[in-house]
Image 1 (cartoon, rainbow, N blue to C red):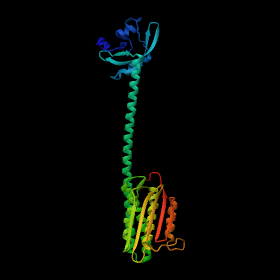
Image 2: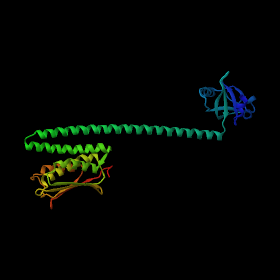
Image 3: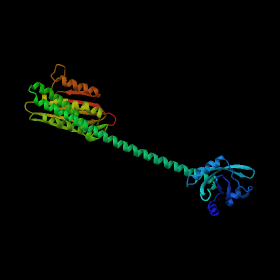
Image 4: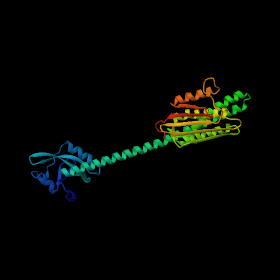
Amino acid sequence: MRASLLGLLRGPAFIVDALGVVRAANAAGRGLAVDCPEGEGLIRNEELADWLAQVAGTSHALPGRVEVRKGDFIERMAARAVVAEREPELLFAIELVSSEDNRFAVLTAKIAELNEEVRARQSAHARAEEVARVNLLLFRELQHRVKNQLQMVLAIFSATRRELVDPAQRDIILKLEAKLQAIFEVQRATYYDGDVGTLSAEGLLGGLVTALRPMLPAGTALECDTDTGLISHDQSYPLALIINELIANSIKHGRRGDSGRIRASLHAAGSEIVLAVSDNGPGFQPGPPHSRSSGLGLVRGLCRQIGGKLEIDSADGTHITIGVPHKAGES
């Protein structure tokens, strides 16, 4: 069996025991250490003993290095070893590796190392995707809970308003309810969009207009026009409050006789998001003494918060335009 095993190996090969004593060698092995009887060319040392101990613990061939006596000098050579027999005695087959074979073995080992790195990265990527999926589920659950809480607060406001008798108190609660409704619409749009950074302009304006329609007096039409662009969450809440305030003011003041027409639009224009709210009412001159000054003051403050520019035209009705700079992630 030893002879047949050695015959399968192309390079110089030896059968050794656990101490490194050569028991047999093939022709190439004997020729390598021609001055040593029966190819006794392997130098037995601590390195060889440690290597053989490692080989004994596996069924695979392990690379290593051995010192070979070639006549009067010793050469350190690459080698690979495998367990040849375990019973009745532990024996090893050692094949010396030529420089070309050694380069191929190094290349093979490098490829195996790269494959292992690819597998590790794929595994890390899969774990990251799983973490992202769980985080998205948690985010949506949080948004859902916040939406439900806001809805409950809105219901409390509405119930309180219905119980009040004083019209002035009812009007205060109604205004607060409208502002909270604007915040609720942003939260609702965020929940349904599922994006942690942006939400759709169409969903924001459409939701606000739908929420404000029940407040319209008879004979007043409310139209909206928007595109499918995205708005950052940082800007969405101030914009929602601005839209709510401007439309609420137009509902209250922007009528001629028994009819009114209110139009709201939200579009991307170059480097800005442009919000426009107009009505066909009598118009007004902005200023502190005017009855709308407190509402307009809120709008101005919110505009400053998001870097917006406010323009008011009262030539034929009221036309308010607000340009807000795009933020990263918007379209």
